[in-house]
Length: 311
Image 1 (tube, rainbow, N blue to C red):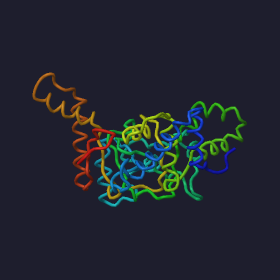
Image 2 (image 1 turned 90 degrees about the vertical axis):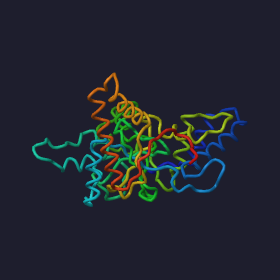
Image 3 (image 1 turned 120 degrees about the vertical axis):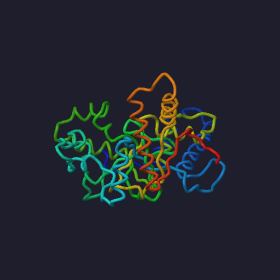
Image 4 (image 1 turned 135 degrees about the vertical axis):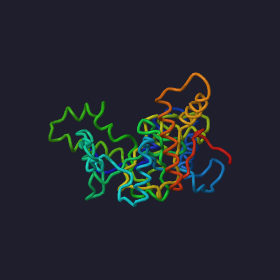
């Protein structure tokens, strides 16, 4: 049973060795690609040691467009928790609305998180590690990107979604144990996935990317690294302590598919076939979200590629 987080540099070496087998000639590429991942995560290009202050890995959260104006207004009013987690929403009841309930599954997972001593789950705000994409759109169409200095170096990062501890195959093993042993088993499993933002992020990213891309005799591009780092809903999870507002944002991102959809809706307003009512509603919601963000001086960018671009 795990009693301390893994040493991620060792993890990377072990994964590469396992994948290489009897192909030592590819080891040079494995080392170069490991370095390329480390450089991308820290904001450096493949051909330069110069740091780009606006590049590199960031914590992101996705939020549905209809909730963005309220988030911006809460930031303006200096609400202590402009961005709200499920525990904040549980304590917030508007009018006759039914109160928000924290699911039993969420509570089970939160009790297993490797948080600093004395930290309560209610103070944790979950995000994902992202390079240049638009985050996990399952959670919302607007991707909020935190500034580099908005995430403390000691912040816990998991190499996967913490919910995996209550999903097969992990849950199959845990459920086979006596009930009194299951909480410790969940804690041990998540601890084995954990590291810190400052000390381990580069190696954790390299370990994840090499699992996705494998090894070979070609260099990984920044775009490939970005896509492998956050592949669909397979992401590295960030456990930030404390909420944040617009002042902590570097920018907001909108997926190019949503931008193209909204442009098409606008074009079809002038000709047939007419767009659906739902399409009009969401176009309007994203427009309001962008307006609210820009009023708070948050840049809004449409993500058109996961690779590098020239200004």
